[in-house]
Length: 234
Image (cartoon, rainbow, N blue to C red; front, side, top):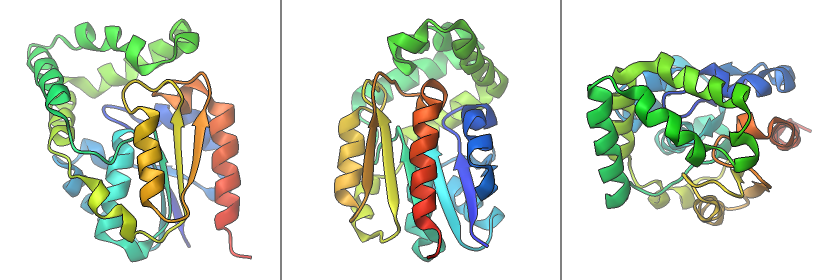
């Protein structure tokens, strides 16, 4: 049986996919935690493939999308569907590396909230950034991850591979989705991914930022359900 695996983003947990778990219940999704157990994107992908045997449909958000793309590179014959939400296939830029290194210094001083709370303005569209319960949920799961995970996962993202080299070789059905106002993985990154994978579908969610699974769950769920229905055998 093909397993649907949901991959959270950096310092995220199942909370990031909470609104999808019920909507996707017919596909019996599970949420992976390989990003919490390995030190590089390549090792996270290998751990995922080792933990979850057989054919897989992978849906990854943000860093989870990077892991999903790497898993598809390592085991293309096992990936029967690829959902890539708010992510990028590009390697780290010098500017972003500098920002991450500065954040890592603060994390090492246990000044996590000082970095994460201002990040709400970058992670969420203004429409959702004012939702105190929603943004509190985001801050809470990042704080639960803790400084050690934030340091390790940011370092993994800094040295991530350039996925653009292998994406044209993929043949599995692919859905690419992003928020139209995503500041962390702008829509041009999603359009680039969709252009590199033959037959990929792209969905741009209006008035939405980087945390699209939390910000616009109804639209995300509808798109995922329609795409997953298309993967069912005739």
